[in-house]
Image (cartoon, rainbow, N blue to C red; front, side, top):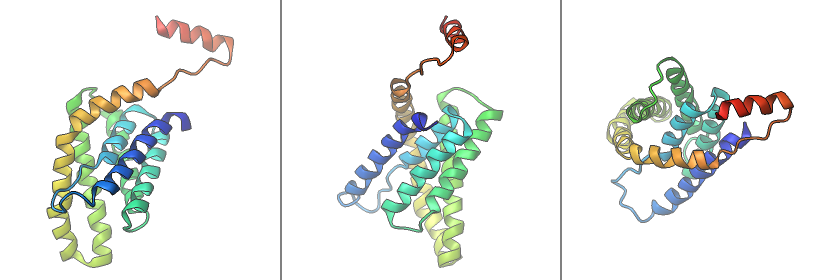
Length: 181
């Protein structure tokens, strides 16, 4: 399980480092795409619920630590999005790009709603609804626009990083050979 999520975690961590450096050089009015959300949705499509949930929690927690906001907010929202995606993928799976883009947008809206609800508890409803409509939904749209090339790139990177484990027992080797044919 840990081997599965190591490479996507490193991709997400690299993005968070780049994002924290770029924030100082880009204008504040441009929301950056939520690449972590895209990685979480793709992991939920690709890996079992436990692995995808663990990856979502750790990437969300790292996002919380680097953003300086409420600790655990992104960890909670990314884990919920991962569970929502895994549930939807298990019931209505369409293995095409459009389904993944739609799920990123739906996950982004769910993520924005969770953030808005928690922020409304802390700051009040009026300020949180303005934040939701202005910044978070624009970020969801930007993330949805950048999702197709990210899906293609990360799918190829996931395939390169996945190494088939050697079978431990003779009957597993026989099953592995029949699967390859």
